[in-house]
Length: 131
Image (cartoon, rainbow, N blue to C red; front, top):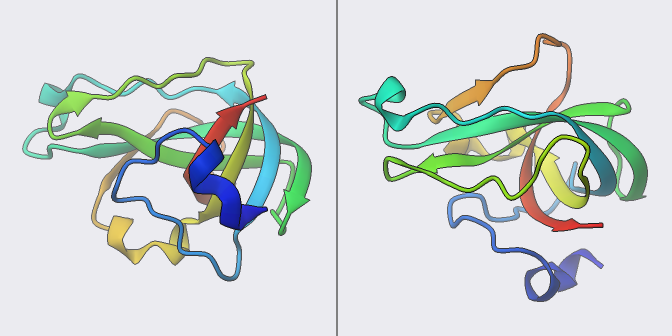
C-alpha cells in the first residue's frame, strides 16, 4: 500500500520525502488542534517553517503509532510564503507519517506548534488525502 502513495495522494513538499523503514505508519485520523502558520515576517530571518497539528488516530492501517493522539508536522511556510493548509479542525484524513527522528534534515527547521500537550510523540507527514 505505501509503495503506491505518490500516484494517489496529495502533493508532498520536496523536503519531506518519505524515508520508509522503521516507524512509518499509515493512519486514519481526525484533526483536533490546528496550528495556523504565522506571518513570515514574524519568523525572520527564517524563510521556512513547519507547523505541527494534533490528530486523534482513529485507525492504524499499517505500521504502529504510540498513543491515540499524535503531533504531526508539515510545511507551513516555504520561501517566505505561507502555504495553504488545505484542512481545518474536524477534518478526517488518511495520513502517511514517519517519526520526526527519522528526518535529520528537518532538525534545523523552525517548527511551530500551538498545542499545550508537550508529551505527544512527534511525526512528520509525508502524504495525506481526505477521507
